Picture 1 (cartoon, rainbow, N blue to C red):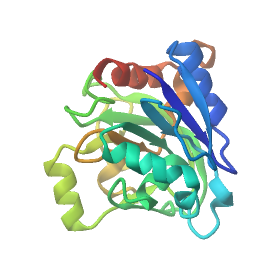
Picture 2 (tube, rainbow, N blue to C red):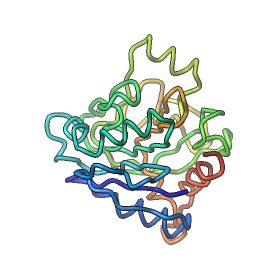
Picture 3 (cartoon, one colour):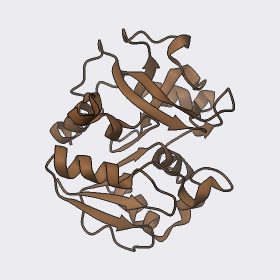
Picture 4 (tube, rainbow, N blue to C red):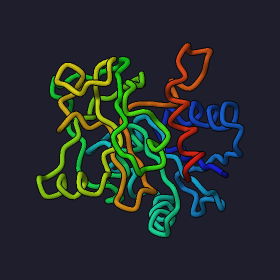
Length: 228
């Protein structure tokens, strides 16, 4: 599978993502620039974390208008795969490729620490091969990661099995103590109804190498490769 990783002004996790795809997954990867008007025939587009355009106005709001996003949206609507991590998730929400919004963390502070994730969706490629009985240790680093959606949107998301991950404790129990930012229903990631666009706040690329003493994130990537 050929991947493409987009760099926006302010991206800071693009090279991390490229390294994981190239060195850990052994997959071909293209570097894409936000001003490109082509995604270079990649199968899977990744929007990495960072602070696109300095998070001015609202996180992801300006990046949504970068020239390449027109091609990303077209790719997604044709059934192509797209993953947004952290700031990338914010951009996907601003682009209306996913439902809901990401608000300031409930403590109004930037949070950078390890969290535990429980896979929820049984049909999405990124979670399909994961154990629902295991808590996956994946770090977060964000100031606006509190997921919110209207009651109507939440009903559709739940009914369509679109919740990818929920914050949990080390024993994979979903509870208030495991929720780092006040996200609605402990939600850490969602996908679209068609299961080809995935967004999550935690950074699996920061937990995908034995040199980091954590390969839990690598299991998410392997699940994608096995099921896409």
